[in-house]
Length: 66
Image 1 (cartoon, one colour):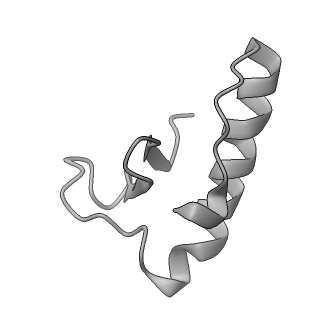
Image 2: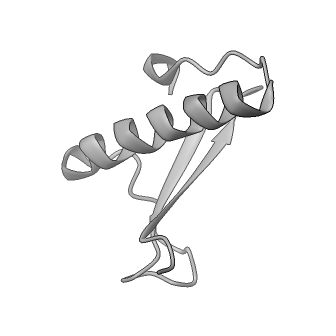
């Protein structure tokens, strides 16, 4: 099953983009700033940090900065 959402993080500029791949497969509408996307964004950040830990990636990504 393909992912429903895609989170892109730009740590050097503290920016994140979030795309709804089901409804916007061309990734045109960034929904990261939408209130209804807050929980999705938080979940994907948790998954990112977990994967970083698994892979030994020690770049600090603080979701509160995005």
